[in-house]
Amino acid sequence: MINNLSKLIVLAVLLLGVISFNACTEQVISPSGCSVSITSFSISPSSADVGGSITGSITINENIGFDDFTLRSLANLYLSTDNNFDGNDINLGAFADAPVSNGNSSTVNYNQIEIPFDVAAGNYFIIANISAQPCPNGGSSSATTRSAAITLN
Image (tube, rainbow, N blue to C red; front, side, top):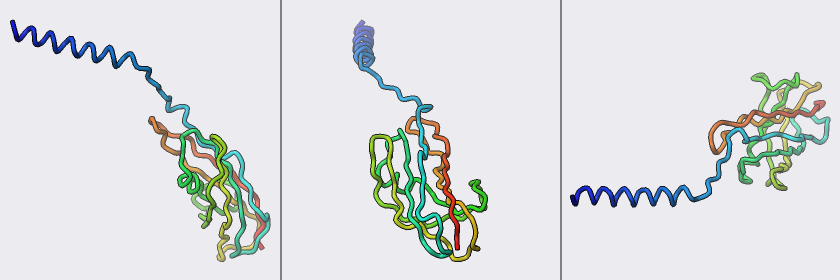
């Protein structure tokens, strides 16, 4: 009899706990709502010397909630001969200032983008690429790419 009464009391306490827990409002964020995109990318000047440096600016729109450090290092810059991001592009060294944020949109200014010494003069593209990013609740965003034309002397 005592054993059955103990089980009944434990069951009642558990049910009260479940009812109280379910009474809370639950917030669910869908992983499909996770996004990162480059909304603009520019460089200056549009002509530079081989081995020289240029400046640039990239605007990133995201709803993941990246901190400044992550935003600053999110994009990789590449030198491309054909404006198509692929394994033939040259990864460029770039030094970024702290991002300027306005809601979900942040602008990262690059005060120095290094042009390699070992490329021929000609017409190229600087490609800004952000690879797919993991979403907080599963899944990932899509990769995003923008480019700007540059002439190397």
